Image (cartoon, rainbow, N blue to C red; front, side, top):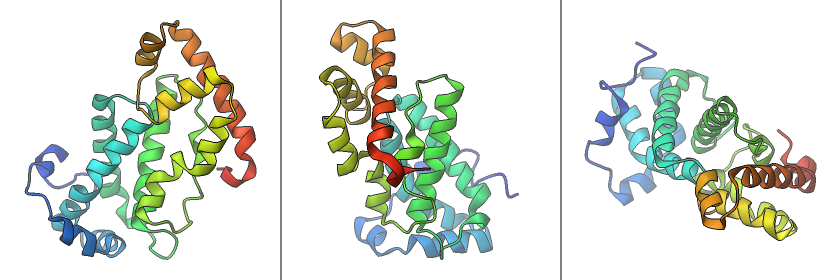
Length: 206
């Protein structure tokens, strides 16, 4: 079935023996993703899961979400990969770019449903079709340009943005650590996000 990945749950796959570092480096992930789309072979999915799932989880945690939420969204991302593999086009994007875009979209949807302040994550990523290497795809949300923009913020706003995006802290953790009301954390992040959107300009338009 197209809607169901190999195994009863994605957790079954994660328990399998991991690839060695040298094997992972030698893989052409775009070719493997293309092969998955064409054959629906569970071995291709397992290879992609082993390599990308831990990286996707780390990426989501760095967006400021909890470990439990990151686990859930990682599983949803990999399920989306299985379901949508046939939509991947290697001529338009690298596999890593395409997969991190799935993770980004899952995270944005979750934040909106939970009524998180608008982080404007869409404006902090390049277009889906631009070919990026895996490291560049993962690092785009914390690029040098974003870091420079954060440094231009007032200290109290830069502090909460840094703690959220770079340290991976939740709003509640930030409020407790800074001894300020939760509403103040959300307000500062909202104001900072609006300023960053203006500072980053058209280069990061979604």
